[in-house]
Image (cartoon, rainbow, N blue to C red; front, side):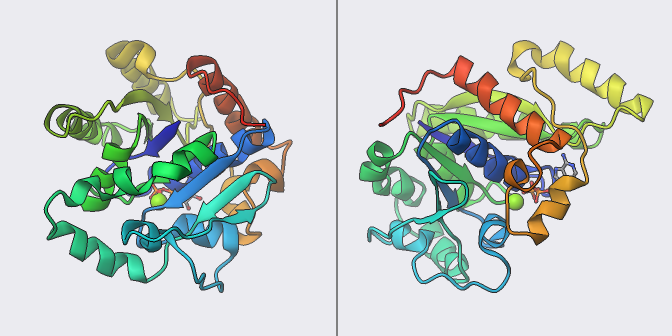
Length: 254
Ligand SMILES: Nc1ncnc2c1ncn2[C@@H]1O[C@H](COP(=O)(O)OP(=O)(O)O)[C@@H](O)[C@H]1O
Ligand SMILES: [Mg+2]
């Protein structure tokens, strides 16, 4: 199952969701491949630390080679990192006929080798995000419950529908994921209620609360589910993984 995490807004929690949901699914016993499709490489730095310059990366895939994903922690989680090369490859793709279908084509054998392939998309609706949407079967959209942050939701939903229609790819929304939820402010409660009434069951039940353990875990090059399993953040992501496993049946590869 290929799952894209997308939202053209930056800082809403795409990388946080992609990294920690991947780790949580690995802890459930699945083989998970995480692809860092953001030239900024936040997922890569989170899992490998700031000083590693990987030799094999996601651009290999986009250029028709078969790079070997690196197994990281927890067991069962594999990463195809982003490097500085991704920005150049992004420019080339943008000028290529059918450039938005390259990842879909390249994922061929990787789809079979992993139970889950998670795509961490960049904060725009450019060619890399289009590649992510075209290669994915389902999309998760992290949303911060602030009135300003919800204005972009329709844009990403439109982008998903365009990919369905124009590229004829069977991608659809798995759900909106409320992230950085902070009930100390009344505004949050209002916006959460509004989102749940407008988008109904498209808003997943599990909410990711604001939790300082999450940014902290980045410095330790560990997902929060491993860095502090008892933290609210870790528990929210474990619950989210179980909710998604109930919604989407994915048989485990032994
Ligand atoms: N639930 C949360 N609680 C606390 N901090 C969070 C939470 N979700 C994300 N963050 C922090 O917010 C920042 C932006 O998140 P990130 O996942 O990088 O967003 P994006 O990938 O959409 O740009 C990061 O510093 C991250 O650690
Ligand atoms: Mg990111």
